[in-house]
Amino acid sequence: MNKAPDAERDGAAVQEFLANMEAAFRAHSLWSGSSEEELESAGEGLEKYVMTKLFPRVFASVPEDVKADEQLHEKMALIQQFIRPENLDIKPTFQNETSWLLAQKELQKINMYKAPRDKLVCILNCCKVISNLLINASLASNGDHPGADEFLPVLIYVTIKTRNSIGSRSSLLLHKHAFCRVFYYEYRCQSSLNG
Image 1 (spheres, rainbow, N blue to C red):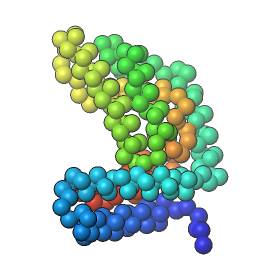
Image 2: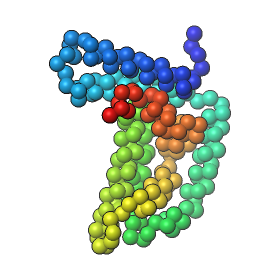
Image 3: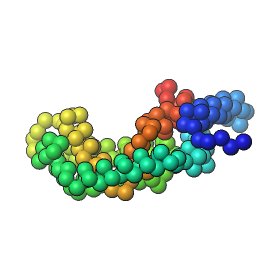
Image 4: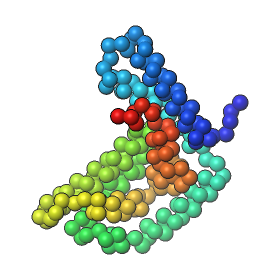
């Protein structure tokens, strides 16, 4: 019988499967001479394959999710109309529309991927673009090295300004389950979290 999607139950089933497969890799004679890196790579490849196949179920839309997505999309569209860097106390030194567009493009790529690691790489790449912007701007102005107080407002601004990737369950912002919980802690192979 095909049960309705349940993030916690489905997450546990995926974790159990991946843990069993990791143990099977390690015990199989074909993998006996493999390095830890090779075993990890094989596990990530399996995880990517499994999550690609399970994607329609894992991110199936239920009526309350669709309604919440629509509400989130409407609110984000309103915020996008008036938010300015000054509203988030982003210093003029760190205001660079070109770099922000690059960071936004990285976030927009999230919907192109189905595997948790690939989605996290998009977020990481966005953060790298922002970090590079902040470091280069502070070096150019002979300012102090930027920290979280400079980084977070820019990340928030970039996230708000990112269009067409916000408001669907497969995107960066998830309304019902936090991104890390759904993607990383529930579906990511548990052994990869213990490192």
